[in-house]
Every structure is written in structure tokens, then in C-alpha cells.
Image (tube, rainbow, N blue to C red; front, side, top):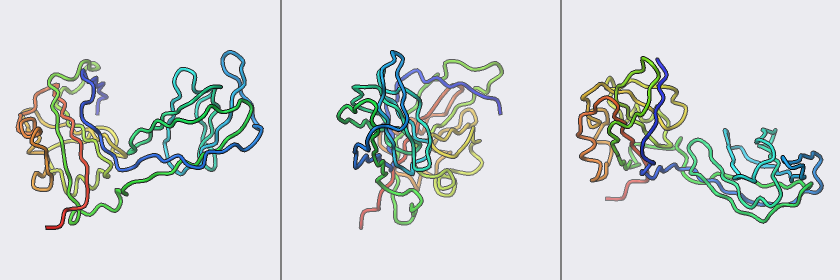
Length: 239
């Protein structure tokens, strides 16, 4: 399938809700760092070991944050930080972003922190006992640029922590879409035929779409249309 470059002309307005949250715990100093690094000005950095089982972690520290890129270790990750760094931003697939603030670390010293995850486990999702809320927004003419020969068909982008196999089994109508790119984690990109409405792609009886979603769902999708759908889930209320 030909590669497509999608540029959304508006900022994301949907509050993308994933089930996992980052939880930094037990921050402490180990002692003098066995490895040393300096920043671009030759100033010594501190070393932070992040003990975690979270995969594909990325961190950002602003203009004065990182001396070196994040490195994988046997027990998580390590990163060299510039002096006076006071916060880091964590991101990972299926996690809500987290800004972690802390006291500046001493240069030439090593520190450690445990980075845990908390929240609902998508692997324990049960369609019979869970309800799924959904919100949809339609961006008309949202594709700003394509590579030569790209497919202009409309897309549906789905944001959720649920595995794609779960969506296929309970929330998508077979034969109404083609999957674009990988489906290891959200957002999942679906290509749909022109003039198809999203209410024909989703199993509407299994989803509780917001009132604001009704008009976008019923709109026939045209070339260069992108629909963003945010799915969240919770225990069904007792009747």
C-alpha cells in the first residue's frame, strides 16, 4: 500500500483516553555516577536510571533536559540529564502522557526511580460486562499534502487502548474498511470507500456515541476527509 503523509490542519480536540497512567515512585540518589557525560557546553550531567517494564518509552526534557538520548538497559532505561532539569515528559503507546516534576539532580551523581503503570488492563476487557463510550469528530479536507499517486480515500483514525483484534470482534463491520499501516497500537487507521458513513463501519449497537457525534457519523465521507474516533470503556452500570 502506498505511503500517505497525513497532516491534520487542526489541533486534536478530542481528549484521547488511554487506560494506563505513568506512576513515578521511590526517587533516590545512588551515589557518584560510574559513567559520566557532559552537555554541549561541557558541563557535567547527572545520570538517572529508570526501573520499569514499560516498553517503547520516550522522554522529553525541554531545551535543557537531556544530555544524551534515552538508552535501554536490562531493568528499564537510563538517561543523562543536564543540571537544573526539573521535569521530564513521559510518553508510550497506550499511555496517557505524564509530566513529572522533581528537584534538580546533582551533576556527576546517579539516581534511580521506579516507573510503574496504573489503570485498567485492556487484556481483561469483556464485551458482556463493559460499556464503550465513543466520541467522533470529522475534519473536512484535512489532508494537506500527499506523496505522488497517494490514495485520497477518506480515513477513520481510532484512538483507544483496546487491541485491534477486540475492535474487529465487537465494534467494526467486516468488509467496510481496509486497514492502513500496522495495528500494534493506536491510533488505528482505516481506509473507507468514498461516500461511506462511519455509522456503517462501526457496530453501532455495541457503542455509546456522544450526542455531538451523531451528525459526523451520518455524514458520507469524501476524499481528504479524516474522522477521529476516541473509544473509552468502563464497567456497565447495574440495572
